[in-house]
Image (cartoon, rainbow, N blue to C red; front, top):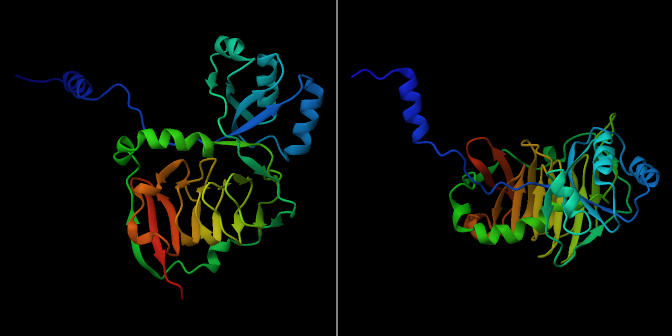
Length: 288
């Protein structure tokens, strides 16, 4: 019996599921509105955003009634991408517009607006970290295996790290990339979010805190809590930690929980990066 190409394709399709759910983390920003005055909103966006090309997915959280359709159009005109609303006053309009409806917060987290001005990034700080003296490298899969076992834990961990308020340092400008150096300790319940360049922490990140950037993340103290680099999808972003022991680590949306971290990297000087087909790669770096 001869099987045609079409028959072979049909047989292959029969063995391939039509869809699959994965534990890939989506990082987006939450924008809170206290007014329905679009002029005031546009003015605030102008002072907050340095350009209209940020392409950041955002979640609408409004304390007042809004013309949701018009608000969505306004946000798109500023380079933001509304993907849903926080449940509340806008639920009915969101259903009509086929926007996602997210549950309200449980415990709120304190967002930090750094008072120290970001500095122009002249070179990658990673160049100062010895990256050719690794004594051990470990790769974790793209979370397609371990995520099944930890789906319940991940589901509770992701919302806290994924939803970040649009209150950090100014976004990347068309002319330059900026790095932010933050000298204070990040304490439990605090969140620091920097978009537009590397985030450099000279102190520690305590358990229950989170540090998020769309570029590289450097922690020169003890790195606990949630560590996120490449938050807007940059797969070349990396995380550098002096003492590595986070509750969650993520690069470009691929994440790993503390229970799945290789034991030999805990409390070591570690570089974390993403490699296509391998997932997160953990490299222990020499102190020299």
